[in-house]
Length: 507
Image (cartoon, rainbow, N blue to C red; front, side):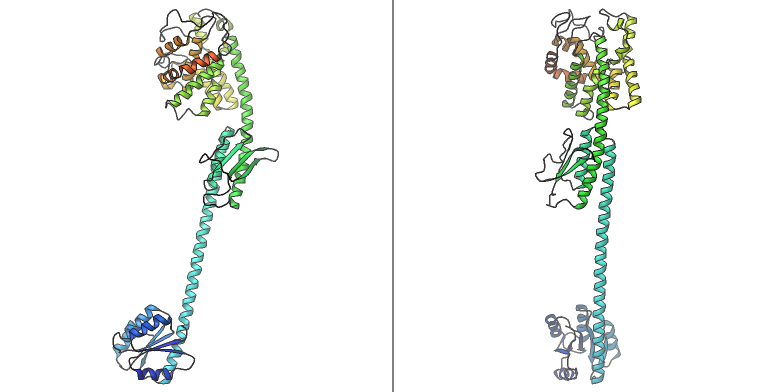
């Protein structure tokens, strides 16, 4: 307590004298020894000044004052003793951190002056401590503020970096599905892994981090000034129940605006690609018509390719390559395998009988012609997946696993996977379809011939995947069969030719 004095002396008469000398207005406490003084301080709390006798039973005055200073550094301590010894004074001043040393008996004027100085020192100590505490508090507040500011800067930097990665991802998105997926990932990461749904013009992919739609969500329209392309929906609250902050809402509006631009580009690209694909497929149909091939040949080959590709993935092959998107591109590209036949003369292309060696050399050039045609298209429109895969198929679907194919004699995995799949699909359809120069084979005989060609004509993994799904292939063949034109129902060949040495079954 401020302006409270404590006098400690084992002589009651000495305490009475000192108490009478103290001016009125000051609160005075007394104790007969160090232990009593410490107990009194424990109950009273702070005092301004402690004046203690040096020589007392138990702990000395120096020991008491040292403990008082440890307990409260603001308390001013003075030592009062009748023993005039230099070493005592030195010990008192150094060991006990004594403010002043008073000789006993102490004149009233000296005592009053010493008490006045001690009370002034006490007030200064309290003021310095308050200033220090305030300074420490200010430093702590400043430290916390700097920490929060650094966190905010770090968080904002992370947001900007994520938006930058999002913009980079969008630049590589070719389809609405990929735009929707990139948008969902960015929105979720910017908002603490909340669940997100992105739906673009009814055809976009919906993407949920935990495959569950939010019951309570907030929507951000993906729109331009003239058109609405979809909506981004996100959990209204995170796992701790916190709503979207104003910053998060601003970030989501930015994500939606960027997604709108990317979706517009994807739509224009899709419309361009569809028009281009329609033109190229029309050219492939023209080549098919000139070749006297059956009317649904291209449709069946596409379906067989899809069956084989899915089967390979189910069997654990090429899982890093065969995605749903890759299979969709394969289906579109497969019909272009013989597009180069538009450059083969009718006399050879439409010949009913066996080709002469010279005619066969001309026929084989359709692979190169098809590849060159598609390369010229890519030089103008870029190597989009459809054109790139169509090029590989047209160029390599007559290559054989053992290197005995044409036009380059590629071996094994050097042959593009898409071309290896089309090679088997094309051969199976050629065997089971009527042609002007042959009758249709039965499914069982065509299957046996393909198995015989495993490891020679065909990739063994593709043969295995096809054989596992032979019943499904037979259903496709029957469902999309052409009306018999020439030789009637499917029938077995006179003798099953050797797959490695027989004449080609497709031209």
